[in-house]
Length: 621
Image 1 (cartoon, rainbow, N blue to C red):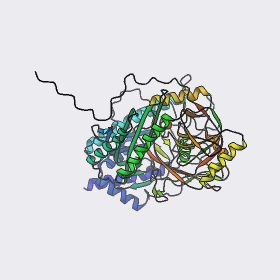
Image 2: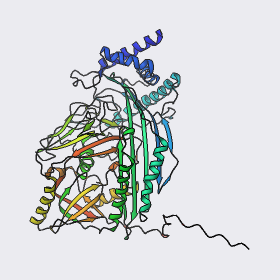
Image 3: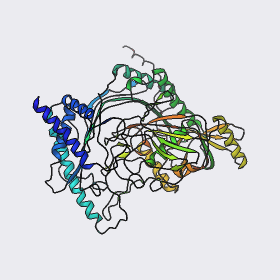
Image 4: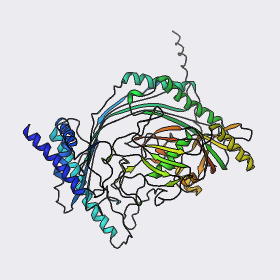
């Protein structure tokens, strides 16, 4: 016991010395949590080290790894993250369940930075590339054996150091002979903070959810023309661990549960129609009741059937109203996706890799919204208007505690979402590193994004204003969008086709999800559902010309995975996000029809969904 106490004191001293060595003279304001350098912080870490072998193994191996100098590169930053999670998932189609899946896993992510904050091994196309043998494990053993835990972390850090040493050499060589005016550094530090919470797990009745998913999938039996349908439930619960050489020590609960519904069919002309929906919660025990989930499933089925019977739309350029949930959807997809800026990585001559560049990069101080609008990201809020917010979190994946952040004020872009990677125009990290990234840096993502308007109109008047606009412009109709395909319920092939079409059309910008519920609005107020249209050249610049906003807030919750269109079911990591926005009327947007060749319908008709009569008995001889 005495040896353990001495070791714990040494680990705490190590954390404090490391934080002092790398501290900046102008620290950020103290966020919620515990100051790791304070007596309460030391006591909390001390208690956790006594009871948690995973956290103890992480800190012990970080301390040892700081002494690595074999390859001659100086280490100035180390971090280790672990997700200790267990999951349950089950899927069903047409009332028949697939085998449930249960898993327990501990993904391990280690990073070593060599060089200096001014120039290190990150932000290079080789930052994540290791040419040696990958003998290090990517996950911790499930047993809490201290020797096995430390051995695995040791191998992971050893590989991370060798990767860093190789990457900084290639990066330095690529930069020789290249003159960069006012180069940015590669690293931002942060004050030492600690957050030690007990993991919370809700009881998941696997038999109940299996029966529920089976029953929900049977809703599609009432829609025999739908060719593909599925209902999936997944729950993941555990703890997130993080420690680094700034002195940050983190152990927090990490929970999410979601029900995903997807359906598709071919219209009579061969066009594939699909729709989907996701119901999610950060508390698996707080998922909606089966009756409410059934309404969601039935809504997806009805949308697919209605769309298959709708006429194909024609090219359009004019005013567009995003009503209800469609407004926060486009804010999430188009504005939100560009708020996290990632710098272009250093590459060798002839080996440049195309990387998506944010449309807000270099535009701090420019007008990006009407002057009567603000945009705020606030991960500290757990609920809003008596509804839980999916984007609430206490600490990001780099051990930084976030605070509310005004991104746009009076229409002017004030700042961006950042990780530890310095971004021009921003003074430091703001705790938005939410997903593992590429080139040695994390992806910065929004949390709870609020679009606030100081000029609003009653929701019903927005449609009247749209009709007045088309009358003034002598147009035969206008457009209302009530639902976008975001996150996309399509396939990876659908995403590739959408990207290819966006490139051919020359509209510019990233591909934007297709509208699911899009209506043609006539001057008499009549609405007609259309299909087969997509936006052309819909970028962040269009948001400067918003004409009007409604007087009601609409909340949209979704799971972000850093994939284009947040494609459902893609990626190993997801984070919850919420966007709250009023309905929005745009002055002019362009829509164009889908011109892809339509696939042929199935050669053989589908089997009947109703139970077939028993075959007649063979007559006896």
